[in-house]
Amino acid sequence: MSFIESKNLVHEYIRHDIETNTESVNRALDDVSITIEEGDFVAILGHNGSGKSTFAKHLNSILLPTEGTVWVNGMETKDDSHLWEIRQSAGMVFQNPDNQIIASVIEEDVGFGPENLGVPTDEIWTRVETALKAVGMYEYRTHSPNKLSGGQKQRVAIAGIMAMKPKCIILDEPTAMLDPNGRKDVIDTVRKLNKEENVTIILITHYMDEVINADHVYVMDHGKVVMQGRPREIFKDVERLKEYRLDVPQVTELAYELRKQGLNLPEVVLTIEELVDALAALGHTKK
Image (cartoon, rainbow, N blue to C red; front, side):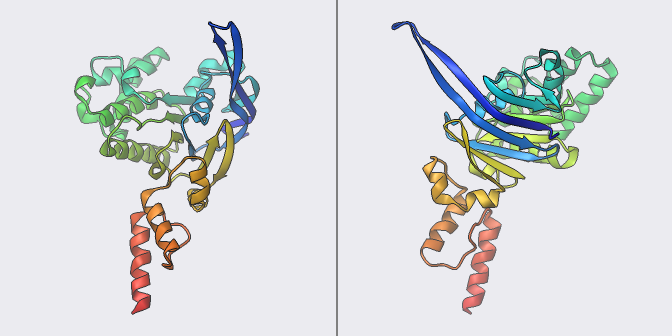
């Protein structure tokens, strides 16, 4: 079985209107089937309200299916007896790192999760050191989190999850509150974890440039998976993405507009380097 698998997943929120004393049903996920293999870097895109964050919460048993099934590391999320094993297998990083950082010293915060798991003290400190070095924050280990930038705080939050040694880290809009430099730091960190530690990464985002190095991309809209494929396949269809109120990476948009003006550029361009090379080749051809 795949590391994570959802099959015909449905999630409905029941809303109660106090004034009219009536209930309404909002189907946030509608027949979602997604498969993720161990070691994958998967991105899930979607506009606000598309269902992507609701899906993420199912992978950590924060939410349970209304219908359908979710398996994490071979365990069904609806089985209460596996709750803590599932949460050890798949750690969650949220938008606001301040909601996850609870200690007054960074190294103590990172050690909090393993301590709760009953990890021996010597092993906790080994994990803390390893995790902080992995996210580039070891030199700040004795500092207060309050003095860190947003990007640094988010890296500490990731280290706290890492110290619990999950096989998978789910990041729900982890850079939404960060400036461009902070965003780059966090994405570089999770890419490194994926490549060097073989940690499965599931990145929920609406920033297109964060997903160009993903192994697979899912696009969600109104609770359904409406597109899936490798980044190059997804960003090839600029007009369709715009129908779902999504952008494409700026360099992809620029190359797309230049192609419309008649320049003989590749069908899809994902990086500045690719565009520079394509334009240079075009100039060389004209000579």
